[in-house]
Structures are given as structure tokens and as C-alpha cells.
Image (cartoon, rainbow, N blue to C red; front, side):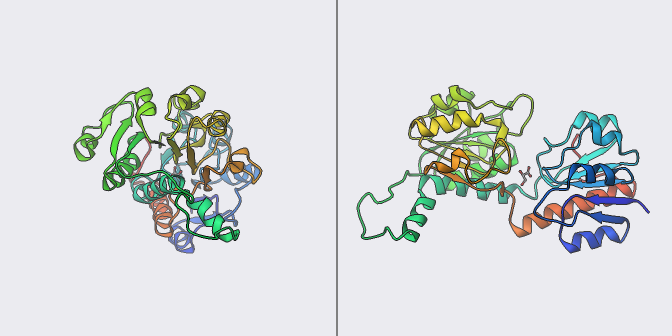
Length: 319
Ligand code: DGY
């Protein structure tokens, strides 16, 4: 019987599905990653790995995985996987596109709204007993409607964010390697250079994947180009941003605030400098985390594994 190793505790239904056909072993914790030595041990006789974005799949691991046929990554991003090495070893990689698009766009847009309308500060204001009376500029924030949103990375999630922005009658700018005519028709979105996007947007939303080209692409020079009234939202990958440059821009008033789902190194601790800033909204990489979507992602990983180990085409192969 072929063996599947699952690197985090998942829904019982998913494990039951896989167990009907395969021998399944699962790291029994849902709140901490499998230690590297355990992963290396488990992979030695595994035919499939169901991985999280916190697991590094690299040359060292693959050398120890003679039977491996598929790595099914529970994320749309796969920067935790060395694609070239995996391909060299003839292993198939799958990810979880589409099923998480709308949920991740919801979170991205809510980060934007939460930062602009100072929702966390406002919530804490009441909880801390500071609310004595109504006052004209109490926790006055920034408008969202009719403003300009600039989306860096106009893939499926970027387009789903643009669709939400249109509901707020925002102007949509975007920056990607190649223009997206469909998005231009549907949202009247304008393809611009990165500099133009940074200079003109009231909300800069980063959804770019992490690649050699995008690592560190937003640094001091880029934040300096943004309007002092603008907000920076990141729901893509942390290392696309130079975090110390972001912290300086926020501290020096070069930008108005930030909404962050991702960080240079995750997890961050409660004494992280970003968390000392009241104009930052931070959440722990939960972009796709609704119950329904996380279940759909798990199911897609299980279906991909079932297909590949049974000699069929994978459903969502990373090519
Ligand atoms: C992804 O799918 O890449 C997300 O970051 C995980 O929620």
C-alpha cells in the first residue's frame, strides 16, 4: 500500500478519504510544524507528501525520498518548494488555486477597510473605557469609496479584490508583468508601472507571489514614492517587502498605515516593532482561513494525491 505523509493535523474527513486507498501517517498537531528530522524520516518511505507552507521541500529532503511521486501543497503559493529540484526528481507538485480566491480577497479587502477606518484602535478605545462622549473627529479615518486602489500582482486574487473595489466605486490601477485585458474590460483597470502605481494610489495592495524577482521589491525607495495619506496592504508574501523600510516609512509618516497578513519571517512575536505602531493592523497569515475554504483546500490536496498515486493526471499541477 502506498504511503501518504500529512505534515499537519487535518480534518478527519480528509484523512478518512485518503485512508480508503493509502496508508496515511499524520503529524498529530495542528498548531506546530513537523520538525525537520521527523519530516526527513517520514519522507524516506512516502509516496506522497501533503505539505504546509511552513515545510521546506528542497534538495536535501528530496535526496531522502526515493519513492516520492507528489507533493501536494496546502496553499496557492509554493515558495516553500524548490520547484527545480522537485522537477529534477520527477516529482509532481500541486497547489490550491481558485478554491481560495474569494476568501483571500475578502480578507485583503477587510484589512484595507480595517486600517483605513481604524477599527482596531476604535475597538480598543471602547474596551479600554475611553469612550466618554461623541466628538466630531473621534477616531476619524480615511475614506475608501471613490479612492484609487493600486494592485501589485493581478492574478485571480488581485482581480477578486478589484471586483470588490469596484463596488466602492474606486479607480483601479494594477501592476503585473503582462497586462490583463479581461481585468481592464471588467474593472476599467489601468496597467501602470510600479512607480506610477505607488505615486497615484491611496491604497497599495500587494498580492505578488514570492519569486527571485519579487523578493525585496518594495523597499525604502518605493515607500517614499507613496502618498503620505496612503495605506499599504500585504496579503501576498512577507519577503516581497523590506520590513525595516516599511517600519521606518510608518514611523516617519511617509505612509499613513498598513494592513498586514504576511511578514518577512513568520510567525512574528508580540514584541515585533510593527506591533508597537497604532497605524498597523496585523493578522497571522489567515488570508484563506474560512472553514469552508480551508476544507476545500484540504480536499483538493487529497484529490490531487489520489489522482497521482492512482496513475491519473493531477487536478492542479504547478508547471
Ligand atoms: C496561500 O495559499 O498561498 C496562502 O498564503 C495560504 O493561506
